[in-house]
Amino acid sequence: MKVLNVTAKSPRQITIIGEVMVEISDLDLGRGQAAVGIAGDSFNTAVHLARRLPAQEWRVAYATQIGRDSMSDQIVALMAAEGISSALVGRHPTRLPGIYAIERDARGERSFRYWRSEAAARRLFSEGEPELSALGAADAVFLSLISLAILPAAVRTTLIGTLTAMRRRGALIAFDSNFRPALWPDVAAAREVAAQMWQATTLALPSRDDEAKLWPDETPQELFARLAGHGVEEIALKDGAAGPQLWVGGPLICGPFAPAERVVDTSGAGDAFNAGYLGARMVGESPAQAAMHGHALACEVIGHRGAILRRAG
Image (cartoon, rainbow, N blue to C red):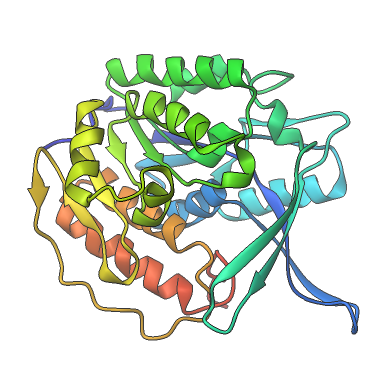
C-alpha cells in the first residue's frame, strides 16, 4: 500500500505541529544543580526525523509559538543546528516558552511537573504568526494529541478541518494519540477530539498505554477496527518492549523485535519510534521495515539520558 501521495517537487516538506519547552531534569536543590534542555513530544520527533531524512528530498519544518526572550532565541538556534526550518515559528511579544521538570525512578520511568498554562504555544494559530493557512504548503503533517490539547477548542476544530482538507488533496497526515490527562477536563473530551482527528489521519501512531487510558479493556484488534472505521489507512501501534503491531488494510506480521540492551530513561521512546517509522515510510520503505527502524531508534533513545540523543562529537 502506498501511503505517501505527494507532489514530485524536491525537497518536499513535512510540517510538525506542537510545543517546544524548556526541560529541567536531574534537579538537586541541596547542591543547587540541574540539567536544562529543550524538548517536547512532537519536537523530539522533529529532531530525530530531521537527522534521518535526506535533506535533498525532505525539509522538516516546525510550527509553534515561542517568545522573544533569550530562551526562545536558543530554541530557534537549536532548530537551525538540527536542520529544522523555523519559518513557521511565531514569536509572541509577551508570552514565554513552557517549562517542565522531569523526575525518574530506579527503572527509568518518569513523572512530570509542568508550568505551561500561559505558554506562547497556547496562542498558536489564534494570535500572530504563523497563520493556519501556512500549513497548506506541506506535503505531510505530523502532530499529537498533546499538540491539540494546548489549543483553544475553536482553533482545534479549525485545525482538524484544515488537515482533513489537506488529506483529501493527497497530503500525508500522521497522528499520535499521546494522552496527558492533566491537559484535558476529562477522558471523554480527549476521546472526542481524538476521534475527530482520526478522521483526518492517514497514518496512525498510537501507543497501547495511551489508548488503554482512553479506551480501557480494548484489544489491539478492536483498536484497529475503530481507527479503520474512521478512515485511517495505516496503523503502527506502539507496544513498549514487545515492539509495534501493524495494520495496513488488515493485520500485518512484523518482528520479532529485540528488547533494549539497557533502560536508563524512557523519556521520548514513543517520539523516537514515530521518527524512525515515519522517516522510513517517507523514503519508500515498507511498513515492516519502518517498524524495525522505529523500534531500533526507540531502544537506542531509552539507553541514554534525555528524550533526544546527543550528536556524536
